[in-house]
Image (cartoon, rainbow, N blue to C red; front, side, top):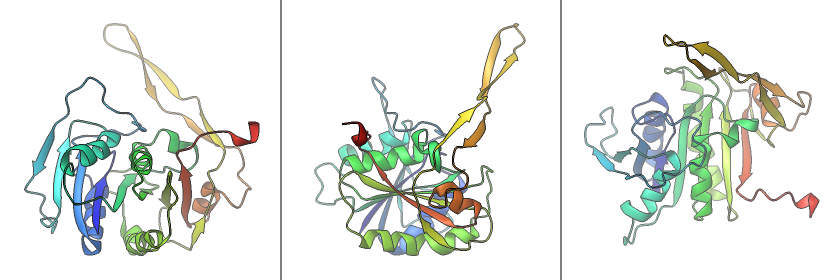
Length: 248
């Protein structure tokens, strides 16, 4: 099995290095990741911008068996580069994309902003099974011990399923000890008070993202946010078809 790995935190971060190590026993591993942070990139692609692939030959830490590249593009670009450059004209096919492990939650409304999940959606567009893994800790050195216990088995299980076209999986891990796994739907939520104003040395006003997360349905027991609040891994099937069928 040929496994492609990407993320939106950039190559070298703990999440993607951990995910690469966990995937090595499952197949032949290829990594194309942004050279730096691309959080919040969603499915953004580079238009009218040259993109480069740079081979990483000194990954270390037992990752020598993986074929690793970085790019100046986005997570979504990474999938297109894999299909149209790395694997172009090759009898090899990408059997699975895994994206992450993201530093921070991609549950609920966060999925529409997520570069981690943006890459999964581009893979789903091309009929490639895809799983996004996220850990609900935004720190640069999260304790991924619990996630490591579950990721290989979750990957195997989801690969045994027949994945319909356009579907990918959004998997989020709670911080700390895991008390179960739950299939979930995306919680309805929004962000408020998202920007904080500042004044620079020239007297110009600029803004930084902050924001408060507002869950519209905190008591609903079938959502990703509920599962995470109860120390469960949340698995949410996610569709690239955004049609509001109820209104047709």
